[in-house]
Image 1: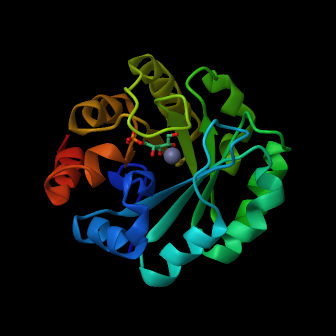
Image 2 (image 1 turned 90 degrees about the vertical axis):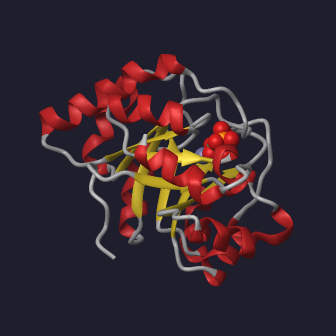
Amino acid sequence: MIPPTCRDRVIAPSLLAADFSKIREETSRAIHAGADWMHLDVMDGHFVDNISFGPAVVQAVHETNDIFLDVHLMITRPDHYLPRFVAAGADLMTVHVEADHDVAETLRRIREAGCKAGLALNPATPAEAALPYLEQIDLLLCMTVVPGFGGQAFMGEVLPKIETVARWREERGLSYHIEVDGGIDAATAGLCAKAGANVMVAGSSTFRAPDMAAAVKAIRDA
Ligand code: DX5
Ligand code: ZN
């Protein structure tokens, strides 16, 4: 498979909205519905006020399905845990700039491990927080909700930040993907794409849709 460029639309259903009692089938359902990547939300109960799953579940998805794994680490110490997610089969690991670690060093180690490196910004974090790291990343995630839970309402105030980081990418001749996560459906995906985002994470609007393939297509066409 040819890896997508930052001009290609990527749809990444979030496993957080799936039925956890049948993870293998739910991942297969997303693949058959047209998903490009699977988005895996790791939450530690400290960095965010929720606990989801860890490396064992990432490994279960990796071993039972063949899809690119986009692992979003909402954890306080991504530097400490990253080797376990590498071993579990992560293809891309996104860490938060707000977490308690040496961001440049963590990003360097992710790439050194052979994974793609992503950096995430919470809605309240200014774009400038990502500036020192732009050359070290394959993806910049602009959170469109306060992370922690699925099913929250999209925050339109994040759109100017997406425009800013897309402009910086052009000005600097860089090629990082711009990902959005939280409250993404066919309507909000269109707004994000217009602002410059290409990777659309969608939990509730895909896994909980009556027709998942139609939902994925609607986000792709938005
Ligand atoms: C939010 C997570 C998201 C979440 C999105 O903390 O990072 O990936 O699963 O869920 P929806 O699409 O339902 O807003
Ligand atoms: Zn996420």
